Amino acid sequence: MKKALFFACALALLLGSTVLLNCKKTDTGTGDILWQVDLEGGCAACVAIGSDGTIYVGDKSGVLAALDPDSTLKWRTRDGLGFECPPTVGPDGNIYAASTSGYLRQFNPDGSLGWFVNTGRNMGSSPAVGSDGTIYFGAGDSRLYARNPDGTAKWTYEAGNAIYSSPAIGTNGTIYFGATDSKVYALNPDGSLAWDFETGDRIYSSPALGSQDRVYIGSFDSTLYCLNSDGTEAWTFRTAGAVYGSPVLDAAGRVYFGCTDSSVYALESDGTLAWSYKTGGEIRATPAVSSDNKLYIGSFDGWFYVFATGDGEMLKQYEIGTVTAGAAIASDGTVYIGSHSWVLYAIEGSGSLDAGPWPKHQRNLANTGLAGN
Image 1 (tube, rainbow, N blue to C red):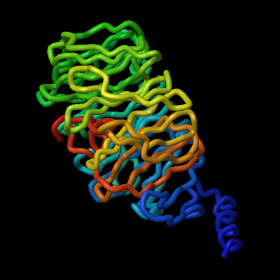
Image 2: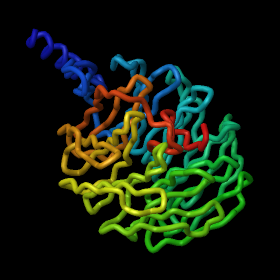
Image 3: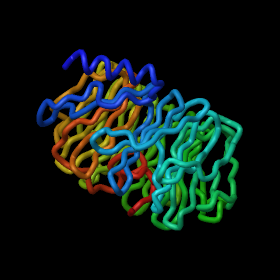
């Protein structure tokens, strides 16, 4: 059996298969790894999950793949450089993926290319999709783009520097994002500026939206900010390192985030500390919260952690290599996480995605970044 498995893997390599399916598939019981799929390049981004359960994952080698929930490959395609930010699935099933080569590509559900936009500069954030199908995305050319569902230009807005923060769309259609000019921006649906707020350093963190469209976002100035929907400051929380990843919010109103000071933080809704846990390496990943009160997050120390949201007790950890991606928690409880060891993991969990206002990167399984949807 072992010889057959070895030759199957070797044959896949000889045939140039980019995704080696089932070569390391295991069934180890509740709470353990269900399967793992080797990718050609490290996985730096959270997966997206379509309404039919299809898993979309990009890797740093430039491969975008669609997998069935059992890890069977449906299709794959390649970009010239790499996908370092999560893809997004629109309400029509189309997939939007930004690449480090500067292209935003729209793929049809069968994997065929629909249209593309060349920004000319590196792209490091996920596109967001509004309720009307408008696609919003930022790029290293300092512009926030709005495109109609057919790919035609709607408008662009020029910030003061590169945008590596994924946009978030509020309940009234306002678009929020951060930029490396240290500012948080809020744009009206027509692309005009509603307000901006200046932090003390560049922003790579993507905003999370809470009740009444409060904006939660981190900065390299070692601060997590909570801003009111009009751009005024509600509260701040200081850390000992840059807040690179994005915060998330659960149904109880708590805010969770990781930091390059190696700690995971849980804050009450007023910004006071509930608990923290120090890992062995800096954290750039965005956490995800499940409906059974568990927090999932990876660290540069090579471990993927599971915490109890109530008191921060560390419940379990998996040694899977450096993690900068956020986890995705499917409706059946399966937790998907990619690592820089070039592997996508499916881990058996016991709860679905939390019902809070922003429980994971870009809020929902499709990564649309749309509040209240």
